[in-house]
Image 1 (cartoon, rainbow, N blue to C red):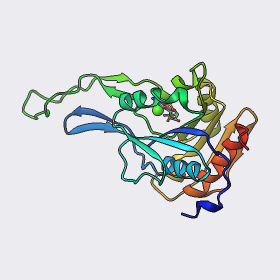
Image 2 (image 1 turned 90 degrees about the vertical axis):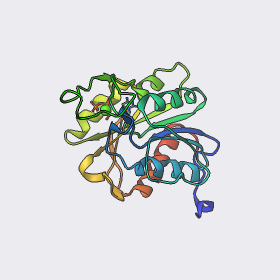
Image 3 (image 1 turned 135 degrees about the vertical axis):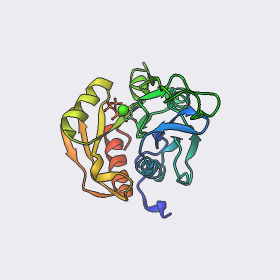
Length: 221
Ligand code: CTP
Ligand code: CA
């Protein structure tokens, strides 16, 4: 990695970042999850590290190696991710929520494997998970918060509505048809000034553009 040449726009900044999906157990061998490769979040963690940040990556189950120099904390469920993030949020300067957190978990998860011969179709009861990003954004002395909005339509309206609802200064929007699972993505930044489309590129080039933008907004260079 030739990060020798990367400008250290986040030198000494502490970045906390979530990536990947969460997995909500139904029984010991089954669960509910979201589609997320983790690649965008891992690319941002890598770019921020190369830009000089101290990076802690709270990761749901993905098939990726931690970028060099990044502290990785593995979690499975949204509640695990919530606990790992809240324990570290007050010491972070910047929080980027890239994870595809399951909105609901199973209230009646079974301790043992469900069997087909036990009286018909099982009823799965769902209960809402905590909104990790909104909770971090509500902390009195919390970090600068960045959210992601992956939408299938109405990107600007939905992304800006999310930004206001969660009370965060910056949200990164993408259409799911542009990015899922692939190497490339198309991102649009939404803040108080309006929208700024980034140049469509590889996830790693986009991550560098995003890190530069966050460095400018947080006045660290
Ligand atoms: N997020 C989070 N915790 C949750 C749900 C979402 O931290 N329980 C974060 C995501 O990591 C992302 C942002 O909030 O940065 C938006 O997630 P998204 O699923 O698009 O928004 P929701 O508020 O859950 O709304 P909906 O799923 O209905 O679109
Ligand atoms: Ca959601």
